[in-house]
Image 1: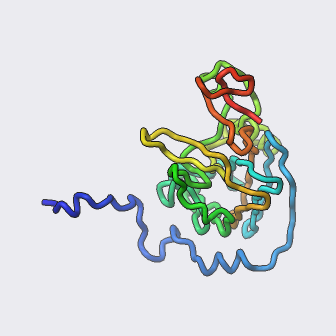
Image 2: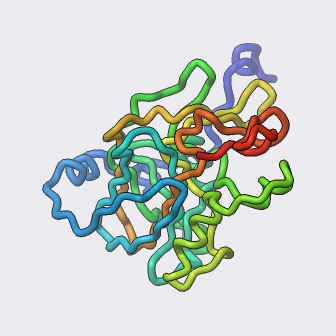
Image 3: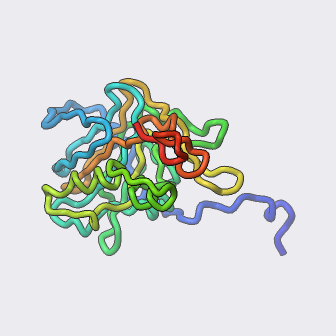
Length: 251
């Protein structure tokens, strides 16, 4: 029978790898990549309430930053030459954590199942766990979308992250059906005492960043969330929406 001591011990993580598994990033290797010299091949600023997709060669580093201050972003990732292989948020969450940071990897869906990219730097890695239980770079939730907004509020709005990502990938031959669960970068979230999802204001300041090393040739798409820094955001009754009608707050 189990002892009282073992019965009170917290359960271990469900997914644990043996030494040498590719689940564990080589910290020395990726630290050296993060600190090596670079040649910039592309740079752009994404306007608020919009989306953009771009190609990433294998071996390149992608830095996503907040050049003007706090802003949440919703990121989708596909293998460039085969968009059926795309980011698998739920398995990544199981393998690593509910919120990602340096040396965590973003895994692709079955049957491919391999790292699409690895996080090599994160200026918010020290955020930790706040007094509400919130953490940064969220995998608990997903993108905002017009369908849930209409269901909850009866209102129509077409600049949700789902809509922005859909428009962003159309020039690359993809459609709404290719948009998938995201990593919400710079977003602080958690689960309350009732197990319900909550969001907090974005902690990023001007110049904060997260960097990804592309393990495969990728197509990435990013939406600047219409919630902005999420300091004024809610769905449904009591949310105090854009017109004070209890709908979703947008910036």
